[in-house]
Length: 250
Image 1 (cartoon, rainbow, N blue to C red):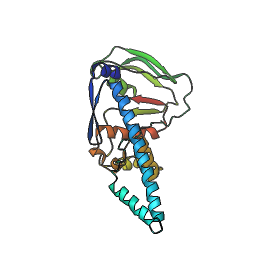
Image 2 (image 1 turned 90 degrees about the vertical axis):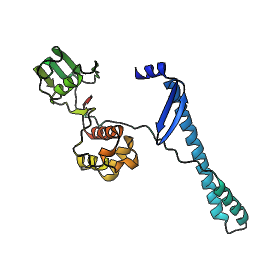
Image 3 (image 1 turned 30 degrees about the vertical axis):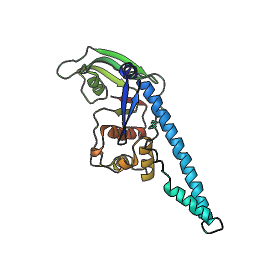
Image 4 (image 1 turned 180 degrees about the vertical axis):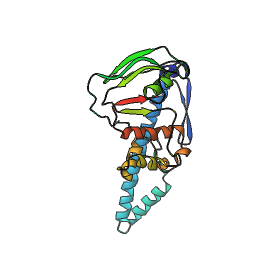
């Protein structure tokens, strides 16, 4: 829905990435295609130049003291004058593969009966629904209507005003919430994940953080200094390592 809206209203896009701003003309879909094409072309040219540089340097090392030393010096001058293409600053998209437990049998994972949610008064009418293994469901509604309260009540963070909530015995919940809460924000992403999963080596944690899209320069910075987007990636990394079979994203 968001992409359709952007396609409908957008004529120009300013893309801010790694300290640079580039202007694109056209719809959002056109922007995505243009950006992907430019990145591919840039990477191809960079790789081509690096290969040429390596070949030239190898020739210089081999011939700098032989009969072809004059040619080697000439090629060195060419290298010195070469306008080098900077390494690409864009990265692969994050790859999230959750560590799902496979012990959730077919049937009902969650049963909600006559549930009333709210604080002093119910925010919603009585709710009755069931979630079966393998199903994916979305809760939609206007801001303030009670979506978060409903999810918090289902997860046991809020007390229900009435009704019943039953999870299957072998349900293991993985929960990602928009309000990013950390035990200690002065920790770095590396320290935070290591503290949560003590059997993981430093190398393993760095690799997992990288797959989640966290750049190397952010891995050793305090979480409190990172942007909301980077903090969200840290939380997703934590969720990746939990063995769960019932995911809840709020």
